[in-house]
Amino acid sequence: MAALRECVAKYLGELARRGASQHTLRNYGSDLDQLRDYLAPVGEPDIEQLDITLLREWLASLYDQGLSTVSIRRKIAAVRAMFKFLREEGVVQKNVAAQLRTPKTKQRLPDLMSAEKANNLLDAVEDGSPVEKPSKERDLAILELLYGCGIRVSELVGINLEDLDVGEGWLRVRGKGNKEREVPIGGRAAEAVTRHIEARRAEPQERALFVNPRGRRLTDRQVRRLVKFYALVVTGDSTVHPHSFRHAYATHLLSDGADLRAIQELLGHARLSTTQKYTQVSLKDLQAVYDRTHPKA
Image (cartoon, rainbow, N blue to C red; front, side):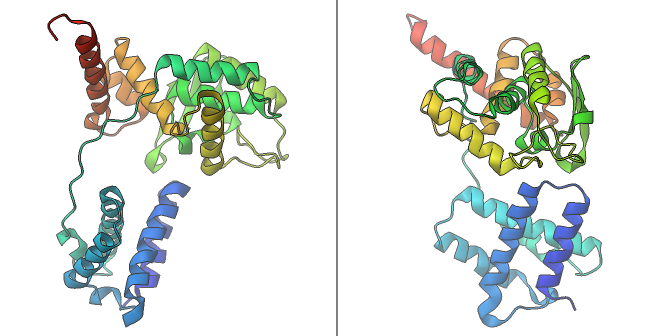
């Protein structure tokens, strides 16, 4: 018999070993701890005592709390993944969480930042207006890489100096599951990165490309705050986040004729179906243009 607490710790340790991001570890850890908290009043059970009835009661409590469908789906996914791992390890006989019904979500197209808006934001940061910050070179390089390379925020903060080949115009990034891929760097992003490296002040042994004022690796949370700050100050839009640049990168490439398979490789998507959502964004834009301009629309 193994206690639920021990199983959660073992599973999170395995995720870390596989190269899961800190964001993933934090979210899955929180979701699994919430399951433990729900069970706490009756005493924490051994993992084999967790049956489908208990899990369905826990699921019902999530609905009672008024959580969004997206949040509930993520919590179910965390519990399922843990049970799958425990079954593979021989800790449990079966994955009882696989019997949980996942609520359906309405398909939502990603919010799209126009090329004009993205470039206006980058131009404003480069010009130092309407706000001047001592870390301007670093911040501009961050924004240029997010838009110019379409990388995830976890990939951005994981970049080391040796991952860059600015002269040849390539960047090595480590994506989900610690999978590596090469991404081309455009001229504007390469110039921003070069200026940042010249101004970079880091601890002697720190290899991270982007560091905080203490000279240590920047975190994904700090990058999110940075992006939100500039977006709010420059455009007045607080909804812009690092992933907004990734959406814009993919959609703008597709709109200008890039092949969907090539975009899939650039984004590091394991499945083409994940990339295909950007075709829906483009079709939506085409429909809007038609509605505005065609005399018979």
